[in-house]
Structure formats: structure tokens, C-alpha cells
Length: 357
Image (cartoon, rainbow, N blue to C red; front, side):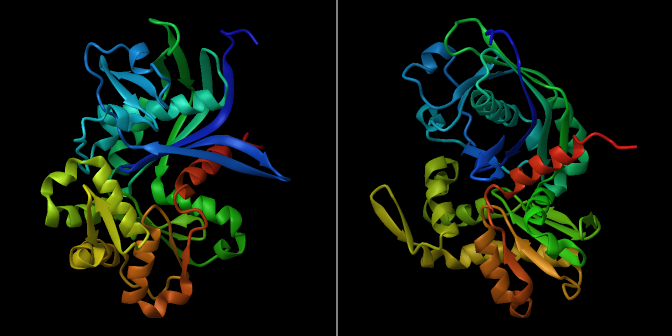
């Protein structure tokens, strides 16, 4: 294959979150079955010093890439922490998908898609699917689709001044918990033949919930609230040292301890018992779930409650205690971390099917 011959892939998906970026890498054959391959990296996009060239930043081959947004270079990828200042504030913004950081992170995901496709200088993605929380979906769906479509140039790590080109021919945006429903339904067809399904999707920045009858959504009962796992971690940090809010690694450690129901977390040589902060964490869980239940109205007609997302187990356990009579219809997603992006990918495949007369 000539170096300048574009590599073409059909469908790919990207889920840009506040804690991590998830992406699909196409279908791979595992044994006798086809599975959607996935990857992730942290939601860090530190700016590079003005005098540091992309080639210098990539010296030593750190895992990631340099991306340029509005003439500012960012390092994005699994080793982004190496370029972090130690203070990486993360605010839950309604226009997050329109920020420079979001675009840098999305292009970082495109870098890994480019690399997996073994492209040399140019990659064409026929259809890219992304997701948004329900509370920002209506306002930002078309804007994000337009932002994703077209040409994306990444500095070539080997040849100074040259670029690798990624072209997105078509972009679609769906609500994030809808991706989890599509993914779960693909493996549990009997569950979704009929009946009401509630998908509870606690991510980093927002708690999303999505109501559907079978696969048809009820938008009036669906919604989102801008407090979830990140707010839980902040509730702990604020009790110890409020400046920790901007320390990516410490917040990650707190979040991991909460999600895994660990007895403690350690930082700076000190061990902190998580039980000492249970009241603050539960206050966030109660606030967000109360908002969800108020929008849902009655819970009595639900047939399945599916918990997905990075905070799935935390919210599943909390909801089970508050509504024990609903425990028989509660289910944990098989792959809560990657459920959304896998669902995006499946949705892209469905949308890309040729229309039959």
C-alpha cells in the first residue's frame, strides 16, 4: 500500500466524558464471534508550553498525540498526565461539547482510531457516532455533528511540519444512555420485546436517565442532572482540602474508592477512611436520584431498570436501599464502562445500512 493511500473504515464511535474518553475500534473476530473492540484514555488535555514542538513533546514515544485547536497545542492520550501541571480543573459545563478541550479530546480519540487502522498518512471514517447528555442534547446535537464532520489534521510525530489527515464523512449524535440501551438490547433481546425500560447512567459529570418502551423513547420522562460521580468525589475532597478539586489524580483516587466501595483511599502518604465521608456522598446520590424520580413520576409501571456507566454499581446499590421493592427488576449492565460507546457503534451500523425498497 502506498503511504498516501487513504485507509477507509465504516463506523467508529467516541464517548467524551469528564473522567475518561471511550472509543470503538471496529469489529474484531474473537473465537467464532464478532465483538466491538474498545479503548479508553483519561479526560486530560494539558496545554503544551509555547516553545515545545510536537516532535519534542513526543520524544521518548509517550502514549498519546499532540493535537492543535485554535493554534494551541495539547497533549492527549494515556500518558497525558506526564504533561499535566497538577491542576486540571473540570467543571460540568452545558456547552462542554463546544469547548476547545472537548475538541482536543475527540481528536485524541481519532488518533487512536487512526493508529488501530494502521493508516500511514490519511484515514477516512464513513460514519462517526458520538453522544451527549440529555440536558444538552437538543441544543448541541447539530453543533457537535458539524464540528465532528470534515477534516481533522494531527501533527505527524515523525516528519516536522507534516500532518496526518482524518476525514469524517458523516457524524451522528445520540443521547448517551440510549447507547447503553442499544448495546444491552443486542445481547438481551427477550428483555426488550415489550415493557418499560429505565436506563440509569451515572457518568462523571451528569446523571442521565432514559425511558423507553421496548426501543421507543419517552422523552417526557427522560432527563439528566448535572451532579453524579464527580460531585461525589468533590464532596469528599471539600472536607479535606478544597484545592484537591483541581488535582486530577487525587480526584481519580477518590472516585475509584467510591466506585469500588473500598474502605479507604491513600494520597500524600495519608490514608483516609471513606466511611468518614459517607454523609456527603449520600447527599449527592440522594439529590440526583430525587431529581430523576421527580421527572419519572411513578416508578410502578417499570419492567426493567438498567444501571450502566462508570458509577453504575454505586447508584444500583443506593437505589436498591431506597426502593427495595424494585430490586427484582434492577439489572447491572454487562459492560457498564463501555456500554454507551458500544451502543453508539451499533447504532452507527444500523444507520449506515442501505435502505431497502
